Image (cartoon, rainbow, N blue to C red; front, side, top):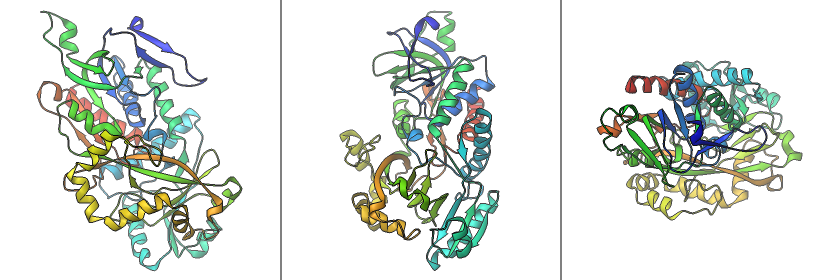
Length: 442
């Protein structure tokens, strides 16, 4: 194996990156497709449970955590929002505890700065109280409802009628966390193959009689360069491309991924004193997006936003990024049109705010009136892999899916790992590893 792989130098302290040389094939018991935070956490969990297995992570980019895992708000969510009893709620509460513990063990810096979910209108108060009850059912620690005076004690520049105080919420650099998972995986003997974009999965042609490799590693995985590996089983954790990988493998195309871009503003450094912890609005129950919020970052900056608009490129982080293929995939899907037609006014408002700085600032001024357009700059963006069914319903919980036939029976697709997947990554990894053990009899 060592002869087939070549190390590539990276920045000081970075994860060592590897790739296949030429067309020589290497064999693995399990290949995990996708080196985002969920894929890496899963690979780490599998190799800790099964140290005798040969495991690989296949990543199309030059480094781990290049997309959603490296383009998010960095919040460690506490589990308030999610339907009691759902996998999402269970894994978030477990995952937050595991995340804090892991960061302590690895010396990864984080801040448990808390969060206020603030009601600024009287009609939001019943929803806020319902959110409080939901958080209690989900066993979120430390929750309490506070009034206007206590809001200002915690956030002197914030105005509101009532707030839900979540002291357990924190912030961390998830790219750093993901890279630490990658190091754990490699140190345990796992292999990470970067610059390996999977384009085909199929059963190997009949091996010569008695070929042990052909029986043990019957699935061939190829990349766009024609390089290939063989493996026994495949786990896909591909985020923005989860539906495409499912289609490649001959599994169900549903649910489809529709990309939504979220654009953030940056509070100018001299105004960072306006925000101490996370400040969130009371969410609209019709949408999974949490609305404009104030998010302190580990580097001392403060992000404001995001909005939520249809992205015309699955990995398009700029306002005018466009991919003809991604665009056609989205606009020819009936589920998207059903969603759009049900929410025309909301969608037009989000699109307007994407281009209008003053419109975004007006949303923020509901909570901190002192913020002006002179206090903000356009900041980074992220793209969310929102799963959507053909009826136009946003899929809000985790979806694990396999397939039929020779190849499909050897694959487990993580079809939807919605926010808060980064918070929940270690708990999700346990759930995926359990499912892999059951399906693949590892």
